[in-house]
Image 1: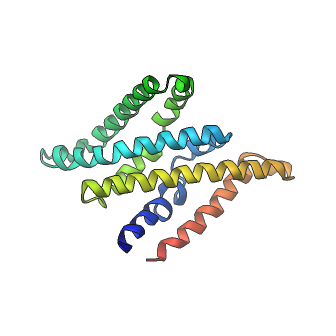
Image 2: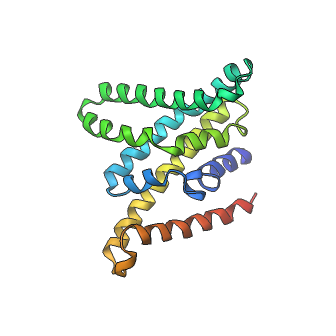
Length: 191
């Protein structure tokens, strides 16, 4: 049971590519302007992780490796991510018609989200079973949502304070994210 919680903490915080290596920084900066947008993008990314991680695990272990198509794995993974985003978008628009405009506005951000592909490629060797894929997806997506909400709160706090003109907006946010990333990278030595 301890290993299970260590796995969740590791995937959500310590090894989260968005937090430690700032992968998908464009989506983090775009989604952190308003709390509603941060929640929407974070939940949409979490939903995509929950579908993409198990799908990519099945794709790699039951299609790519048995047919010796490793040289095409990147192509198949990108294709599966695009199809998943499109199918989830259509499903959410039909289930939640009152949020259709917001869902449609988030879709281009999700398509260009490098966090999805980077995370799938990073965890591809660590995932052994389908249950591991679901746990990694939940933990990694929750960590990404947490990061977006923290950046949104950080932006609000920075906007309320007096920051020198040269550091306003993006520069001070990037400096803060760099310090935050270094702090989380220091946790990777813990086991």
